[in-house]
Length: 275
Ligand SMILES: NC(=O)c1ccc[n+]([C@@H]2O[C@H](COP(=O)([O-])OP(=O)(O)OC[C@H]3O[C@@H](n4cnc5c(N)ncnc54)[C@H](OP(=O)(O)O)[C@@H]3O)[C@@H](O)[C@H]2O)c1
Image (cartoon, rainbow, N blue to C red):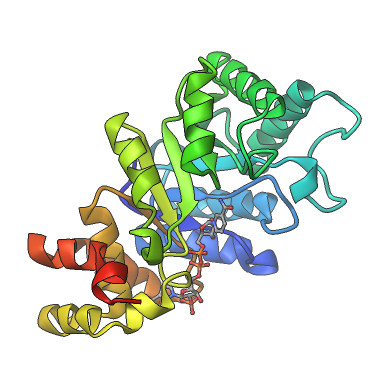
């Protein structure tokens, strides 16, 4: 089952295990990570999961675990695969390493962290995508996703005849209609859009009086309004908060009953704001 909120584990270094366990204690059931030691400590996530299992907070079946394959260009020297191997082998090695880090026999979602080129979907991406599909067919992965993609990437992926992703994970900017074009592409194909940096990428939108007014009306925080808005337009939001109160606050946003006109107003805020 796909949860309605994902807890993101980037940039937590030696706090990764404790924060992963705290997120599970707080009620998160979806965890996002990556086998990219430069920004994530995937083995630490596994330690946090193990601690939560031991404490009886959750069991593996309760969880949605998502991780990623990252090209060498996005990594530092701590690689989860042999850089001399072909890409298909690198994917297989990265999956095996993730399974070991996370102490599981399958991943609920496996995401291509970013295409090889910012300009379009390349032959390298097709090779990696096919290797990811083989991991899925072998039962090591349930569904596949792509991250940091433009509409062009997605159109070219589909035009290549490859199967579309189940998830798209993007940084979501209010100034482009909260990634409107990509979200429309996803909605038309039953692809679930995962939005990250909803707070940090949208400082202007959060300062907008319209959002402040909605927050005051609902006695909610600005962060809660943005997360609830994201869900209301069909997104699966991520938060990587390191704060226990924010974890509770972010999850509690799910109970916020935004009116349809409030949701529409936030969706068009960059236009309405006249910036
Ligand atoms: N695919 C990719 O390339 C990619 C890139 C970036 C991120 N991600 C994923 O997305 C996750 C989330 O990353 P993010 O970029 O959205 O940033 P983030 O790590 O969630 O940081 C958000 C910022 O907002 C603050 N915050 C969170 N909840 C808040 C609240 N209720 N009130 C006030 N402040 C709040 C946090 O501060 P506190 O810690 O003090 O709460 C933090 O400074 C990452 O951990 C990662 O899993 C993926």
